[in-house]
Image 1 (cartoon, rainbow, N blue to C red):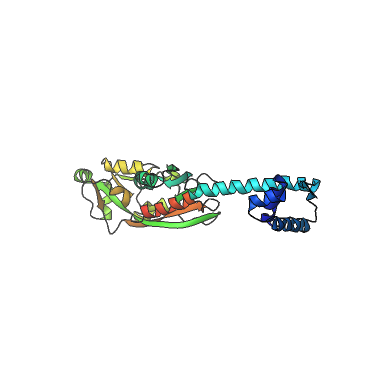
Image 2 (cartoon, one colour):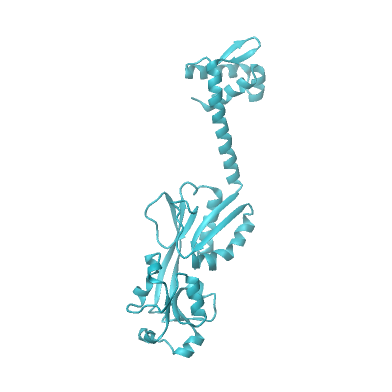
Length: 288
């Protein structure tokens, strides 16, 4: 069945005289009549009674009108949604790890909004992940590449973590020039049973045998503890560089690299607002 023929059928049903329907469609009456006959042949139905006063629907034609109008309504809805997306409108729910979301993404969203004034953004920056497969977010920045789910995956950037303290703390508690010096220092890190990703278990990887004394599931809270001189902590470099009082320690020995991955649900990945946001995020975090 040809959808174009169905649209012509609707026009004739609304303008019973072929000449009027033809003027509306831009076709001549002969062509229009031929197209209607083709549709009747394809369906094996007589759709119109042809009289001197015009074309009038048969019972079969009336049934088809109801179905064709439903198809027409759906087509108009799709077209309207497509037009809206081309204009880059709507709302995006973006899930992101707390540190990246608070320190890098949040300050940049004003620029995104100025470039795309019809797009609204919900920034979900948590000590944990919001699930894209469960539709808790349209897209999410993760520490590991998802292996399952109907997702479009994109690597955003690598980032580094190092050990930090403040000058005031080091002056008070003593310098750190080797790993063994850490035995006498207060260490800051994650609450063990609240670690939400294996990628955050870098204490075991970098400082085997040592465990943190002051703990929080929030990397922002950890950084604030370190910045206040409470102890030493392993922090993302992109966060630590925001505070000039933080000093990197054991640069060659305590260093780890991790990655950020962007996951977007397949159902919304092609929407213009989400494509714009994905590209914006890639540019924003490119040089962490």
